[in-house]
Length: 289
Image (tube, rainbow, N blue to C red; front, side, top):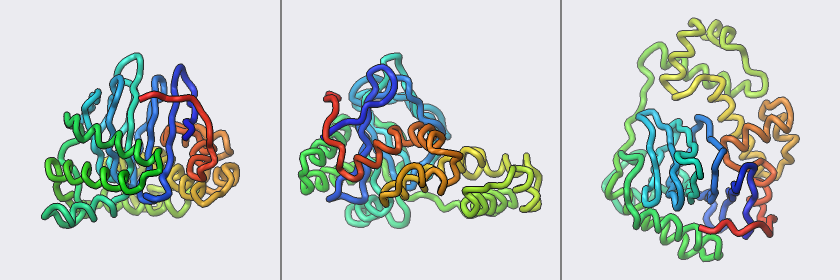
C-alpha cells in the first residue's frame, strides 16, 4: 500500500478506509511542522505514538503522548494536536464509529447508553501494540484479524477506562441560543450570516452568543463552521465528487481554500484522501514504523 507524502521535512501520512471494515477510518503518519487546529470527530479516536511526542490539546489541558501511551478522545470533544518535540511524532490512529464502540460495550460490559472513556491519555503498551496490529492486519487485507484485534483493544480499554457519557440537556438561554446558531450554520453552510446578524436573528447579543457557543461546542462559530464544512467535504469526496465541486458545495471560496483547511484538519490533502478511499493509490515511500 502506498503512503501519501505530506509537505514538510520528512512528513508523510496515509488516511484511508479498509473496505471490509467500513465503520473504521485509519491514519498512519509522521508530522513535524503540521499542527491540527481545534476540531472534533463524530466518532471516537484511539491513537498511539511510536516515535517522538504528540501534544494533544483538550478542554481539560494538554496530554503529552509518547511511545506506549494510548490517546482516547470521545465524540465531539474539541482538540488540537501538534509536535511536542522538534523531531515531531509518528503515530497510528483508529477512528471507529460510535456504533462500533457502543456495540462492543453492549456485548462486553454492563455500560448502557452512549459510552465513553474517562481518561484521555493512558500508559498501556499492550493496547498501543494492538492499535498497530489493527493497521498491519488491514494493510495485509486480513479482515478477520483486523476486526478481532480492534474488538479486543476496545473491550480492554472499555473495561479499564469506560463510562457512560453524560447527556448535555440545554437548560440555559445561552445553550439554547448556541444550539439554534449551530442549526442556522448547518442550514446556511455556503452563505453563513455574520456573528452580529446571527445574534440578532436569535434575539441575543454577538458577544453573548460567542461566549455561549464556545462554552457549548468548545470553539467559536467560525471555527466550528470550518470543521463542519470539512466533515461535509469528506462525505462528498467519499461519494466520488471532484474536489473542485466539493469546495463550492460546502461553502469554501475555491479549491485552494478547501485544500488548506482540509489538510490542516484531516492531515492529508483532499485529493490524496479521495484516492486512498477509492483504493487507487499504489506507490509511495516506505514510512517505517
